[in-house]
Image (cartoon, rainbow, N blue to C red; front, side, top):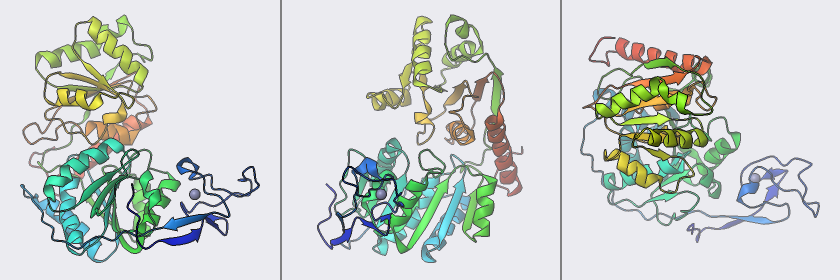
Length: 417
Ligand SMILES: [Zn+2]
């Protein structure tokens, strides 16, 4: 239950054709069976109808002592990025941190969160995906052992006494001018990216004088330009904490395999996987659809290759990921479900039908970012199996080249390009 027991304000659900829950404009054609206006934008959360009322609540958080347990030291560059976020917090500015996959965005954030806790701020970390919400909550709890931290997603809605809420973006519909610090992580990910409804929820949940921090691993030049024009503060971190460059793609040309069959396994993918298994290397194979994943799993089994297959509809996915993480199985087939938020030591990745529309430039960069994250395995292999190179592959390749060059120029790499 959402803890909304104090400071209730009753307000008309729709005022001047604006939905007071999600801020959506009410279209003249949005009439229910009783000819009352309703909001189409947030209908999925239960219909908001003209003439009814909403209750807005403000949670009261008990002031308490907080501690931060960091068992690592930030690199020089991470410290600069952390200072940038702290400055954004102190000046109540919007701050945008673009840091490549494996730069340690979460670690960079801790100091800012700790500072906010000490000021008695209500903090929300919003992320587009439920699995990442759960994963980050697990990471935060030992770092802030005296702090109340709760996750919010479809099946989990307890916010009682929580100093930090780690939430999906959708769950922010329950809050209005609630948070002093709002951080949106993975702002480049579906479904947040280019979704005006979700952007509205984030802004409405933040207090008008609150601080807004956005973090992302990828960006587009046009968004940087528009932010610079709006005088927003941006910090770019083009290198990983271990000072090795980002790995480039290797392209392997194949026929497009919407239908996986025996002949498909005679190609380079099969040879490549066999080699990885012989070398005892964990490999994630990204597929564009759940169906292709199933066919590939079946095909591997026929060939005697042990593998696991996960997707968003798989109830046992956490157990399978655990087996893969522990090295009990070396080959994991996955949809874009695992494109982000997962760190596996020493993993290589392959992408099947890399020119499929599911794999846009942001997804390709994120998948590539699974490789080389650990200091003991700072580099690895990313193979794109594709029938052709499309615009998205080109853009993702160009991004990696650009980030490595910038990192080299700024002296953030220990090895020359
Ligand atoms: Zn609405």
